[in-house]
Length: 573
Image (tube, rainbow, N blue to C red; front, side, top):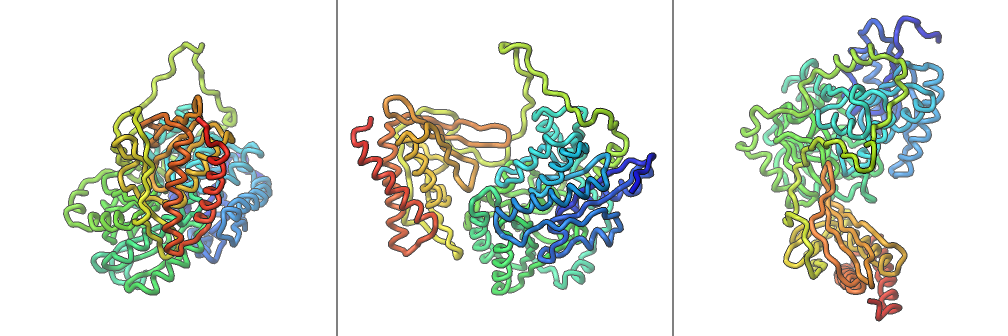
């Protein structure tokens, strides 16, 4: 196909219903622009019957589809995700070579987007990226988004803070445009369904309360569905009607879908929808009484409806949010309490006039105008970040970024305290229906608790990783290890010190920096012995209750290594 000499070719990548809902109005603006030749490259879940074959939505909307790329493996593992990227690269290499655009538009943070960005880099096609500079520390999306930012040449951010983050990553300010989130254009420009029309389309009646549940695998965790047990246990206690929508096509999504179906089959007034188009979904946000889960829609779009949003667990950790969001750890009691708060009339009343930090629904026109008019001359060549003239030169002043609305640990400043006690409460351990073992696990530094007294996490999994790290430092295999908690942004650093000592640092992570909360030095042997005793107490209860899973088996093996190391070095100081 010969290229039109007078029109700029712009290719747009879409991989799923989620990004297509955000891209609809930019696509509409680009398709109507007289100086643009538009082409859509559809891949991933769009072509999967398991996820609703949403390619038909693009066809129905009339956008020109240049290539349909089959790449999504019928898998439920992280290996399947990795192979999907590879298959997508092969298909896109041919498709983008055959129809070589002047610009390629990609969006957000889905892992599949690494494929078109990589191909465009090799083919020297400039990339425009939407929604860079945001934060979601509980998913691999965070790293994907940042990688796409560095591969891109033009940036469209949703908030001023996100723009500052992109610039802080070394991108030239003239390339970075704050436009707002394009998904909000639906709320201004699309004809949302009335309550009656929505009821007819979904085949249900809205009763009070009706709660929308939007939950996705937490891809940063080894077990991507580890936090789901607490959510389903809380929803089993919730009153009223529940509406589930399918998760993204990530590792663990098929298991999550099956569990949702089983849950719906036993709980009255519970509905599961494979796919809802953007207009139907945004219309639903306008009719339900609350949204619960870990979807970005609870953060980015719900505020425009003044809709209470219960954000559960770590997936959206660090995102900017309006005051409609109630954050809850992935603990059943906390989620139940958050739902109760969200449904309270006084809370809904308090949201009158809430402002959505992600914009007001005018992004598409700005995106289209910039893509159609930006100079392509030397667009591929990005200028390096200027460095101070000498090591003693002052660094550029940092623009302070807002901290995420996560409650700080009780220790308010760095402290050198002691002694250390590793606190576990085996009697309070519990196991979900799916086998995940929860329990209290925390550190007492003097009289201060970190993260807090009776802090609940994946107790067996955490102590397993903790003991393994301590043993490696104790035996000299490593000089340093960082152990993160699973459910909230806390970690403990262990370093080997002088004369058989261990240096410990207790850290709280937020969106812009890491904060040292406390530190201490103790004998490395004592630390190892305490860790062994904590592991023994946990395993004893698991054995008494007949609980066995990969974490308990691994912890048992690590415990034996630790006991051997202590016996081998009885006098280590």
